[in-house]
Amino acid sequence: MKKWGRRVAAVLLSTVLVPAVAWCAAALWFDGPASRWQAGLLAAGFPAACLAIAAGLRPPRRAAFAVVFAVLVVAAWWIRIPPSNDRDWQRDVALPPTAELSGSRLTVHNVRNFDYRSETDFAERWETRSYDLDTLQGIDIFLCYWGPTLIAHTIVSWEFADGSHLAASIETRKEVGEGYSAVRGFFRQFEIYYVLADERDVVRLRTNHRGERLFLYRMKASPAQARALLVEYVKEINGLAVKPRWYNALTNSCTTAIRHHARRIQAAKPWDWRILANGHADRMSYERGSIDTSLPFEELRRRSEVTERARAAGQAPDFSRRIRFGLPGGHSTETSWK
Image (cartoon, rainbow, N blue to C red; front, side, top):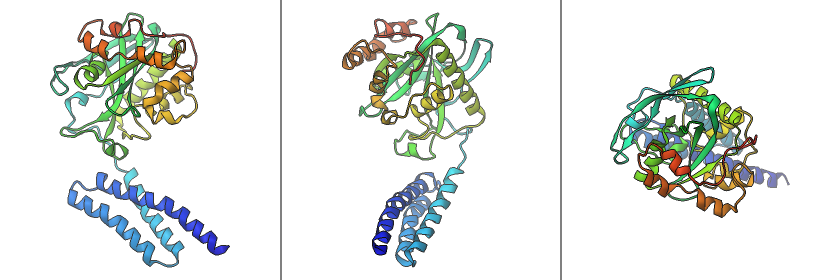
């Protein structure tokens, strides 16, 4: 029985240690020395050293403790890698947004309103805009698909009574010459960046120049909740302008960050696997009653696609009205939304 127990313990320990060692190797490769030769040496050498320890050190318990210690050393190093606001940023994320709130008047600096000729060719327009929070009507959510439908990009947009909208897209802040990688998104590779923008920027960029499919859902959030969420976003973006944070595809991404904000205003619902597999977030919201449920879900989804509308609207001043015309649902005084 004792021998059997030791075997079970060894299997359980290996199921934890093997992935942990693999993660350490990946962290050393992605976040280690700038020299690819040095990073490769560390990434290959670490698991080799752990294997040598496991094979040569006796008793096995001591070997396991030694490997755990090595993993903890790498994890401690990795956690302490500092993010920065001072890098050679790409032009579309060069200026961090900030905002001031005076009573109900919100003034936002560096609202992005680029005029795109292509994804990489554009006229820059960074604007300062003011919004009256007393006229907030609600929140809309865009789901953007660029490939496999398991994963989507989410954009939150606040609607005001005068027909204006403020869109927020939580993204990676990329340096010149850097491209996004889903794998690298799990490591210390990108700072997180909140794009505050005109919808003609963040929406039209995706439909007209990246070839993505976009779906727009009107959330059942009250004006009070919409205001609380926007104020919470403002706190975060002002904080990031002073103290940057890392993006992480698992814990701090375009959808998990939204949930963090919703929790802070006590508007979040229980955890669901579709928060990570956010390509199905619309079905989750439908099942929770956070979006319109007067139609069968498939019909709602079909009617909520705004890809062609956005392409046709182009740079029209009433772009936001055009993509919403006739959409199912609307804003209400419901008290739970995500």
